[in-house]
Amino acid sequence: MLQIRPAASESDAAWARRKRAFAHPTLAAGARSASKLVKREKGIWQRRYWEHTIRDDRDFERHVDYIHYNPVKHGLVSLVADWPHSSFHRFVERGLLPSDWGGDAADTTGSFGE
Image (cartoon, rainbow, N blue to C red):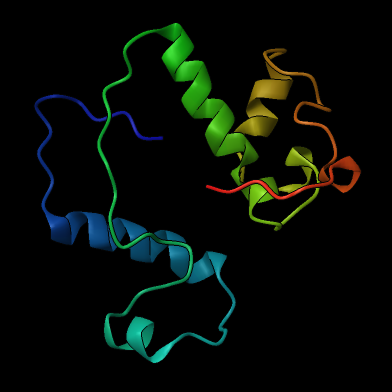
């Protein structure tokens, strides 16, 4: 989640540079589809994004929860705390969330769609 100042207006090129700076050290070289190679895309980025203004504290909580749980939902880890790149660790340090928040996906059965 990014907080963007209303006066700040960044070009698509600026966002592309920011994404490249993040993705380069984060991702190990791996197999990518021909489409992703041609479009110079990495597997972590969606082709589209959506902008949403947070309406209130509850809306903020829902979005943060979604972001924190995403690596579990996509099978990258079974515990939210196991994802090293998450802001979840700061929330735990500040006492805002318990370290076992989200439970263990290994204990969950079923299929949950998106």
